[in-house]
Image 1 (cartoon, rainbow, N blue to C red):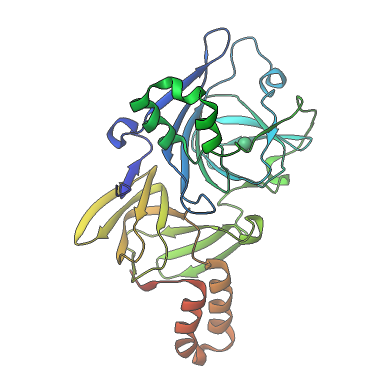
Image 2 (cartoon, helix red, strand yellow):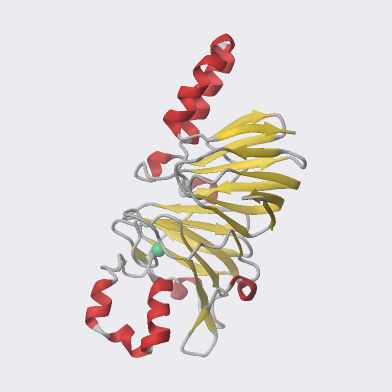
Length: 325
Ligand SMILES: [Fe+2]
């Protein structure tokens, strides 16, 4: 079955996303967890969940609410904080993260959260087998019955579930800006300017085991970027504004909170209908390496740029054919 080109995380019903609510002992909601896309390939790429991390229950302190302290031994977690605010407990420190922040967790980083208010918590993972079969599990359970989830052989076939529980965290308070795992588009690692487009490197590849990177394209209204044949599936997340996807002669609109999935090889374009923030969450293109060399040539050897560009693009998997404004 083809993965939908557009998935609107603000409209689960229209996008066919099923929600599962967990409750605290006092009956208040703890989280509303939704599997959006299972992982693909040996690194479990393109694995997406969308969760409401609910406000900590009445009468419970943040420290009590932080008892879900845990680590993943192999898996990487990236979360967009798209509403509200929460305490983040990370390796002996605590800070507050809020709407607009991005959390990039590497394996063995011990983490817990406690929501100050409801948080839209959009997760993009790789090499994490905790979530990358959720949709498949639910499909089988809906046909064979929910008891199948308790079958040890069924559980074994799903993988190890990379999750190691820890004791309740102790901590010192620090500002979010002091925690490397907390990213924000206002504090990019690097930025590169083009007409109608600012590219910001948010998470470099070396923080992702070399498997992915997170890059943001800030597109001015009217900017149109077109791709030719590209070697991997492309996945984008529109965090602000609105873009038009043109693919196979069809046009689709992706607004705020939409994921865009483009099948591998298929030429396509994205046009900003209003100022837009578009993240490359698939992370297969080696943007940072490409942009460093491109910028170097543009700065020091502009006469060599046109000749060198095709080889640079091929090396780093850059299939962009043009940027129009
Ligand atoms: Fe986690």
